[in-house]
Image (cartoon, rainbow, N blue to C red; front, side, top):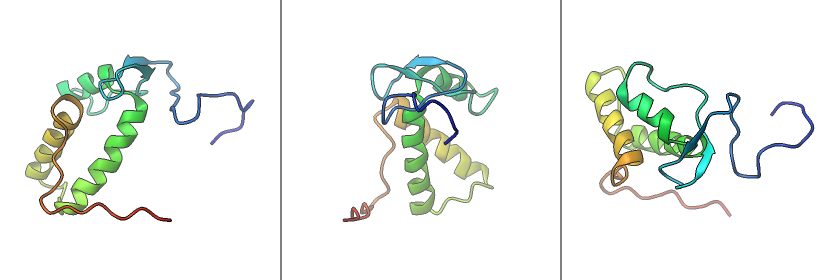
Length: 110
């Protein structure tokens, strides 16, 4: 975290450097958007830039890590990349990315 006046976004809400705002598909309210288009040149990347908040993107990154680990994806393959893109599209614009079969969430730390 950088230096500053201490005045920033409300707790729990991400700021962006571009001032880009979106009506977030996950939170259903206006929020700071991503600073740049993910997957430049891909229609899904543009759609995410226009409709997904920075906070929702952080949530996706955590979900993506779990998906990559549980499915043991090798992102060096086109099949794994396509699978992950489909999961991302479902997460933001569909019914949500499906959890892997037999997935058990880690227990919360006390």
